[in-house]
Image (cartoon, rainbow, N blue to C red; front, side, top):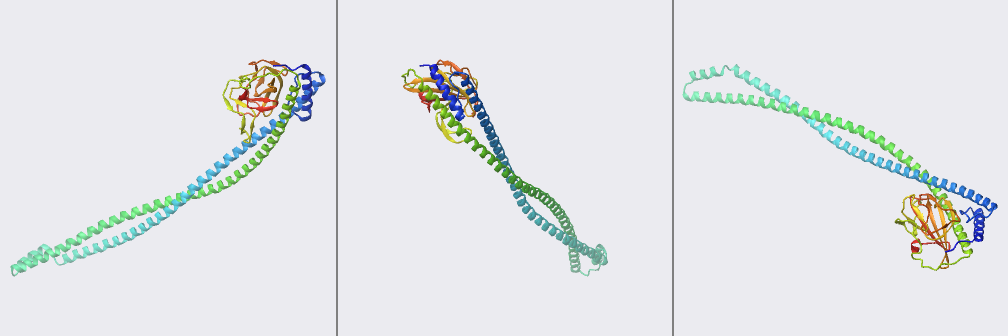
Length: 418
């Protein structure tokens, strides 16, 4: 491994400061050579801070717009579901209304029949009572039946006459009994029909009451359905507005992200060119196992193409994500020099450590989303030394280390070097 000579540091500082002023790129020189260079660095840092604030504000606007869109979509879904439920209840009420109308019609038919049957029963009872009255009057107009039987016995000329008279009396008595039985039956039937009429009236009253209640329910549900349709229309309009705002915010974010990536690409190129310009010894080594893992933790997202966890677009994930708690120490993967540290709205706190020439190629490692640093630009670090702490800064979905390995300025899979 080698360190960078002071002359190379000054050249790299001048290149980075000048380039950053021209492009708004994010970089910090190896060392400050003089007051003029320090002034240039301060100007660069101010430009960086303004760009950082602008992108932070845009990202916050995007999150707010997306949150408003999600809320509007949820409210719209709820309104649609509520309207569907009201319509379902209204359909059920209408179906119930048809059933009730049919049941009420049948109940009213039964009531009409019961009233008719009662009237017929009352008339039959009256007729039967008249018949009984006439029969009794006729019987007693002819005399006391017992006296008439005794007279017939005394006046009978023969046994045959007496027998015939007794048979006649039995027929008359039987007819009288039948008349009384029919009167009793008519009275019982009339009572049954009166009970049926009472039940029919109660049934009709209940059916009418239920129908009235169902009609009130239908009217209320109809009003709810009308209000629900208006609510859905309002929610659709709100969702469309939120979607337009979210789309505009996303487009702005993507444009800023694209510019920032271009700036960072230029920074990487400048860093690598300056590093290569410094004279030193190239180390020959096998890539496999050359780098010490920066943290101890599982890989949560490997190097390669993937869908962005926040914005959903498909692009290159230029490093390996390690799932580690915030505040955990980040180790130097090898002996080297801190060549840059700055804040990126995308990558959060970033730290570049140049490990020099390996197999004729410049090797640099980058720590992203850090919560803070323990080293400064220009510091020499040793393998295993704590250089910073895991964080959740920038565009991040949780505490983790996004670890990047640059070979001649190009991102490669870090796992091939560990």
